[in-house]
Amino acid sequence: MSLREVEILLATYNGERFLREQIDSLLAQDYENIRVLARDDGSSDGTVEILQQYAERVPDRFQLMPASPATGSAKQNFLLLMKASNADYICFSDQDDVWLPDKVSRTKQTMDQLESQWGRKGPLLVFSDLRLVDEQLNVLYESFWTHMNIDPDRINRIPELMVQSVVTGCTAMLNRRMLDLAVRMPEEAFMHDRWIGLLASFMGRSGIVRAQTVLYRQHEHNVLGTGRNVTGTAVTQRSRSLLERMGGPDIAAAHVRLWNISQQDARAFLTEHGSELTAPKRGLLEAFRCCQTSRSRFVRIVTFIRHGFYYPGLRLNLSMALHLWKMKADERY
Image (tube, rainbow, N blue to C red; front, side, top):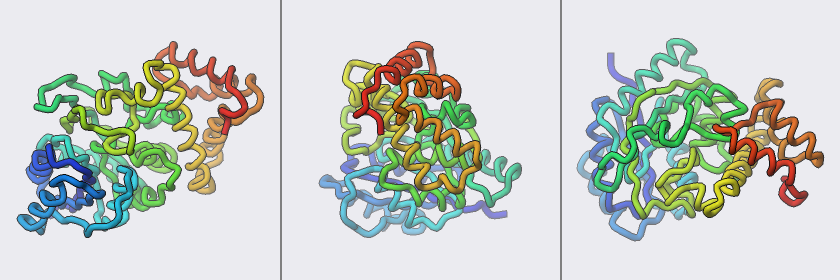
C-alpha cells in the first residue's frame, strides 16, 4: 500500500543563512512520499537562488512557485501556498528551523488515527510540541509547551483557546477538508496558525503529538513586525519576545494586545463562518465579543467569568478583568 502524499509548504523571505539546513531536513524525512512547494516573498539575498538549485536538483520532490509580487506577510505567503496546493495533506515550514527525521511520519500517524475515528471528510488538524534551540541548534528548552506554560488540550476547550492559541504553524498537518476551509482565511485574521486552530476547535477535530518534532531556532534576525516567522501562540525568544514587542516591558499591556488580537480573530471568524456554526458555538463567539463590545462594565466582567475566557494563571486573569472593568469607549470594537 503506497503512502499518501504530504506536501510541505515552505514560505521564505531573506532566509539564506539557515535555509539549506532546513530544506535538507525536509528532504531527509523518513516519510517517503513528500513534496516541498516553496514560495519566496521578494527576498533580496540569495534565498531564491538556493530554492532554484533544489528545484533543479530534485524536481520531483521540490517545486518553486513562479515569482509574483511580494505580500510583505508570512500569513499571506502561506495563504498563496495553500491556494496553490492540491495535496491531500499539507504541512507548514518556516525557513530557519530544522525538522527531526520522523516529524512527518509521527504527525501522519496521528492523522491516520483521527481519520479512523472521524473519517476523512471532516476538517482535521494535527500539531505537536517543539524544542527551542539557539543558532547552533544547542538546546535552550526541551519543551516549548512547558517553557511557555501552554496546555495543548486547550484546543478542545473553546473559551480558553479563544485567548491563547496553542498551535504553532510549523508543527501542523492539515487534511484536504481543513485546507479547503483554511484558504477562506480573511485579511482580518492575525496569523494562519491561530486561524487554523479556531477552525479545528469550532468546525473540526484535532490530534496532538505530545513530543517535540521541530528544532525551533531562536536568533536575532527573526522578524515579528512584518508578520514573518511568528506563530502567535505565546511569547518566545523568537523576535525578542512577542509580548515585549507588542506591549513593551509591561506584560499586562502586552496581554491586552493579545486579547485584542483574539477579539479581531473572533470578529473575523463570526463574519466568515458564523452561519456554519452550531448555535452553542456561535453563542460562545458572540459572548467573547460581548466582553469587548458591551457598554456595561458589569456585563463585560460577568461574561468573561461566566464563560471562562481565561489565560493560564490567576494573575493574568485578574489583570484582564481589571482591564475590562476600566475599558474606555474607544477601546471597544
